[in-house]
Image (cartoon, rainbow, N blue to C red; front, side, top):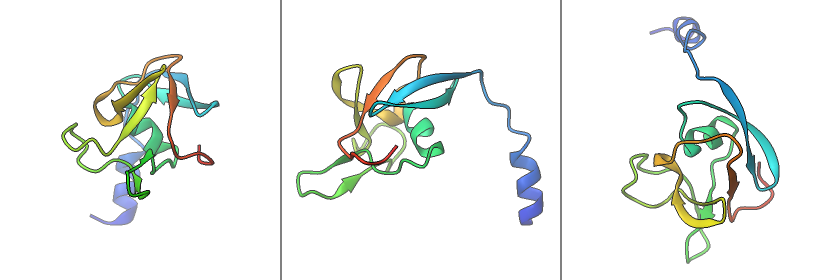
Length: 100
């Protein structure tokens, strides 16, 4: 597939209704049907927390098995972003400050 064919196909993807969520105090636009990880990745956020050794972590498996995508959602720590649907008004915190 050529790049121009791919660009045309991507422009036809239907997304759900948009709504706002909050990441580290900043507003982001999410779309109905997206996971928290999808919203963060779409907004350029690749690092969600630090491992015990200090290395950054983000989405790895994308199916909820590896726990690399942990975030805090509405005050609840260690929520897997890759399997959690985004919802209107959700407050998300990462331990990686300065992004978002």
